[in-house]
Image 1: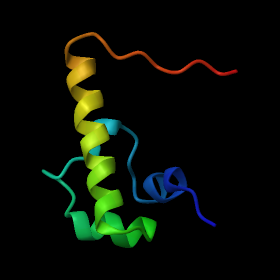
Image 2: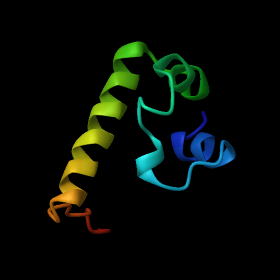
Image 3: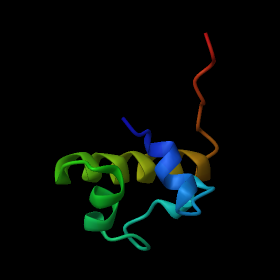
Image 4: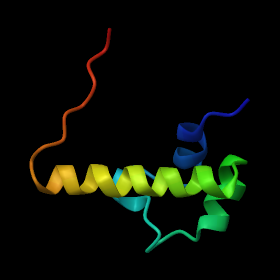
Amino acid sequence: MSFPGLSFSRNGFVRISQLSRDYIPIEMLQQWLGIEYGTAVLIFQSVEADMRAISAGQLVLPRDS
């Protein structure tokens, strides 16, 4: 099993802002991660929500347990 973070780092992604439909076709994200279309959409939606929260100064990162 591969982890998405490893696929992203192998492809030069170091910032969440790089994960955008403006830069990556959804089909490419599917191929890199071996995921379904709907899952790729959810990843892009999560990134967009996080970027809005960052811009608004409202992003809260989870704490390690």
